[in-house]
Length: 69
Image 1: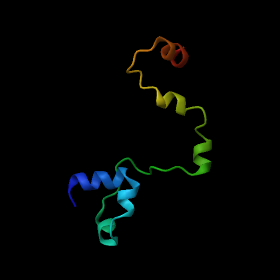
Image 2: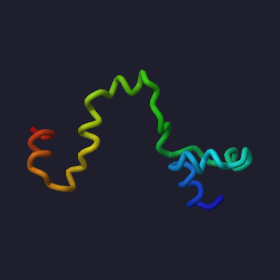
Image 3: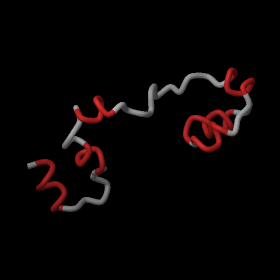
Image 4: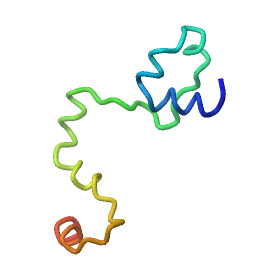
């Protein structure tokens, strides 16, 4: 499996589901770790997603005021 196929398998669930059992067995673990959260895990991060969604790259004063104080 090429490096691009491995990365695609990590990122694209549809592609990953189309792989054979042998291909899945040869797929290395995703270096980012688990990519899905249980409902219990998701409940512990309530309110923190708004900060994660703002990269600050757009330089919005409103965003800076709201998120940075």
